[in-house]
Length: 376
Figure 1 (spheres, rainbow, N blue to C red):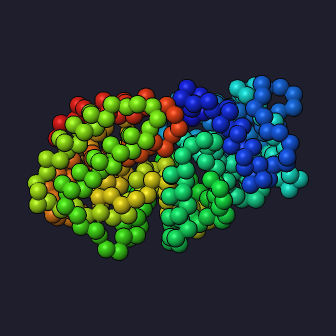
Figure 2 (spheres, rainbow, N blue to C red; figure 1 turned 90 degrees about the vertical axis):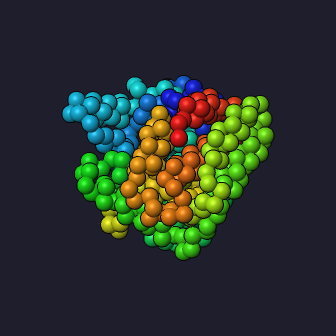
Figure 3 (tube, rainbow, N blue to C red; figure 1 turned 180 degrees about the vertical axis):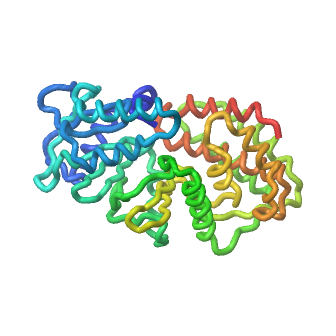
C-alpha cells in the first residue's frame, strides 16, 4: 500500500510524525523535534506519496539501488520505460515531486543521504544503508498483535530462510538489510517459479508433525473467533452476515479431517526474496504466522488467493486440483475449498482488528461483498 492510499484511510502524517518521535533513539535521531512540514527550506527528508518513499535531496547510491529494485516492474516496454522515467525524475528532483517535508536530525554517526523511510500497512520502516540495518516500527496507536507475534516467532526460529532479528524493544525490531530482490521483481519466470517451489517446501518443513483436527469443528472455531474479534472493534459492525457465511462453509462431511501446519499467512512473491549474498531463499514478514490448513499458503502463493476478485477462481482451482489428495487425504477438494475460504475470512477479520478506529472497515466490507457471492 502506497502513501497516497494511506492518506485516504488514516491521518498518515500525524502517525508518521508520532511514530518517528516515539522511536527517535532507536533510529539514532537527535532530541530535536521531528515534524512533518510543507516542502521548503529546512526540510531534511522529503515525502513522495506516489513513490512511497521518504528520502533526502541527495540520496546515496544504495538508496537509489534499493528503489530501482523495488520498481523493477514487468510488462510492456512502454510501461517499464514509464516507471523508470518517473523513478529517475522523482529521485533526482525529489523536492519538486515531494508532497511534504520532514524536519528530522540524525546523530553524527548517521548520514541522512543513506536513510530511506518506507511506510508499510502497519509499520514504518527506516533503512540505514550506512549501517546495513532496517528498523521496523509499529505505527503510532496501532494494536501490537501482529508485531508481537512476528517478534516471538522470529526469536524462536533460527532457520536460515527466516531473517534474524538483531534487536527488539517496545513495538519495534531491527534486522540486517537483505541484499537481494523479491520474486515479484524477478523477470526470469523459470527462476522465480523454482524459488516459489523451494520457499513453499521450506515453509512446510517448519512443521514436524501435522495436527489433525475435525474439519467441521475447525471451521466452527474460526467462525466463533471471528465473531468474538468483531465485538472488540469499537465501531459497530453487523456480524450476522459473518455468521451466515460460516454456516454455508460448515457444510462439510462430519467425519472429514484436516491437517494444520505452521502457516505464513501472506505467502506471496513480494514476501519471498532471493538473497544475493547467501545465494538462498529468504521469507520475510512473519506477522500473520499461525497454524492453518496445509493448503492455505499453497492457495495464497499459487492461486492468487489474496488478489482482489479472484476468490471464486481459487475455489474452482482447488476443486479441480489433481494433487490435492497429497496434501489432505482425509478431505475432499470441495471441503478443502470451504476450509481455505473459512481461513481467508478469518485472516481478513484479524486484519481488520489490527487497525485502530474505523481504519480498514471499508476494505473489510468490500471483502465481505465478495464472500456473499461465492458459489462452492
